Length: 453
Ligand code: HEC
Ligand code: HEC
Image (tube, rainbow, N blue to C red; front, side, top):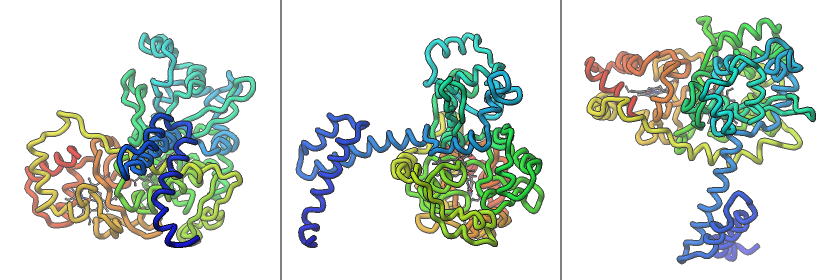
């Protein structure tokens, strides 16, 4: 193909292609695609087509974030048999079953918008039996348990369950009851006890053999996590505890407010889409393709290297076709603004000036991203903490956390492992580390500013 032709025609061809694709995609309203192709002003048709296409892709990405299991029910159901624990003996499974009360107690959330009106009315009237596992099965049938999907067999019994991104990275607004409300995508589920949920499995032998330990050890490790935590590196390096004996699990971070940010995860493993591929394949156990030869480092990642986790191939690949739209949707999730009255505006304003000045925070947390544009990671010494978690990642560093929406996750503390119980504790830490000489009122103002982001 001649280069000159390509140069002149590329823009037009791209526009035509985008429009054609938008028309093919049933989720884009035809009228919108048509108005895009009408091209009201010169140069406008391409812009409009791009925006129309993005709308459909955002919808697709949201669907993936909320509902896509990538085939991981083969692991959570087929291998771990978690569905049997949920059903309980009375419904063809094992053990007592999981009542809605137990499910809510381990931090699972119920999407009120998925429930039929009679069920909402009955819930409001207190007429739903929250102690009966049969009610949990009903909720699963309605697809109302956030981040968990039940797969029925021909008789309508549970054959398997699968999990989604929303399990860990969504909450609900508790509009109907604690744990029951409208979805809040991207919020870290600080109530979710992943370890307790996995521990319900009647058969953890697969995890035990992967890690080369016995099942009782796996159960002890899962119990040590606690709510709001998960250990994404355990399956890579087999390290369950830190040198000080505490759990190696980190906090579940929010999945909002990430656009414009280069590296992701607490330790900067890669971009959002790198991590999405990583999680979908290696943590959720979806069936896709994943490539990251850094996991071949047998000293750092003995489990991953032994099992070739950096070279995952599945046919069909159920992850890769979802990654582009999922990425787009995640970047579109803005950090929510703090509610009025949740912080003192005058103090926050004074804290704002300190953040950019005397307290030196903005040297790393560069506004408005609140992380560095560029290679946004630091050595443990630069932030004055131990290097255990950093050493479990390829670059041995900690990523400068983008700070928006801190107010949404105060329950489990701050920094990757929640070592600082409050924002004021974080400020005290920096005051000592950087010899800032902040007065008590200045520290309070800075903490108030952090609440306002
Ligand atoms: C079992 C809980 C769990 C599930 C399910 C899960 N994540 Fe995460 N996610 C975590 C934890 C824990 C981390 C922090 C990992 C780390 O730093 O090592 C994380 C980190 C992230 C980050 C980085 C956030 C930041 O601040 O940079 C993104 C983005 C993300 N997850 C997206 C997803 C997507 C998309 C899915 C679904 C494909 C998903 N996660 C599924 C627990 C989960
Ligand atoms: C040298 C760069 C650097 C400077 C300077 C810096 N930070 Fe940080 N900040 C980081 C890194 C890296 C992390 C992640 C640490 C971790 O997770 O263990 C972080 C984490 C945080 C967190 C925790 C976020 C969360 O979600 O848990 C807060 C809050 C914070 N910083 C506020 C501040 C304030 C306030 C200042 C100024 C007093 C400041 N930082 C100065 C790099 C920096």
